[in-house]
Image (tube, rainbow, N blue to C red; front, side, top):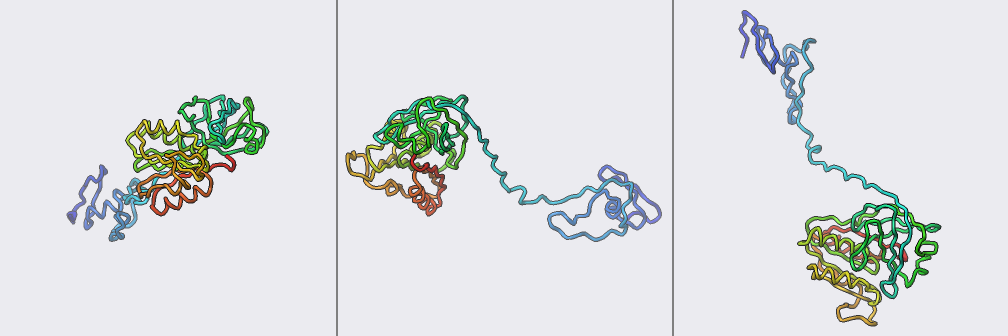
Length: 313
């Protein structure tokens, strides 16, 4: 409304007194005095008409600016928190045979190393070279909190010398750093497709067992393979999975010698079921196995998380 021409009147805007001069509207006076801000930045609108009283009075407080929120700021996902890499020391506790060409090595640490199923760690024995391995459980499912269990290729401890670059025997000092890698188990929706070649079963076994406890209703499809059927050392673990409701378990072996009726012929990648877009695929093995599984997952649009095996592991 227009103020009377014969006199000034008083208004209160945003809790502040406002004197309106003759010929000015109350909106113009409020804009000029900085009580409210022009609508130029609101929701992308253009600048409003200029006030006839451009200079703002110095006694007024700083204008309150109204602006539209940045849409990108509301939908931009937060960056994932960086993983904390810890270091621990300990010693080799035991080395036992699991199969003709597979051994289990257990390292006892001074303090527990925090990691998730599917994670990897960097293991360095005293006088040796660093090796990236996936901690797991014993095939019967056991492990102490301050223990790291590894499944490795070899007939005995002497066969691990080339892998670690030094003799491997109980009591030898060990340094461990981790977790590292991108194969971590991620609870969530979708079928869990687990592919393990040879001692790649180590990381896959850790994921499968955790999933049975955390997501007992989640569908799991497990494919395990080896060149020689005698190296399918994980049968106790598979029996536990079957007993807890995992029915889609496939064993495969390249060689025909002593292959049981429950072991299918050929490479394990030939027995991976048709993948779905909603599947979550974890695979552990040699580069050629991981590459083949990655191609299948990409073709289906499934999420793929590899756990690579160190050469010779």
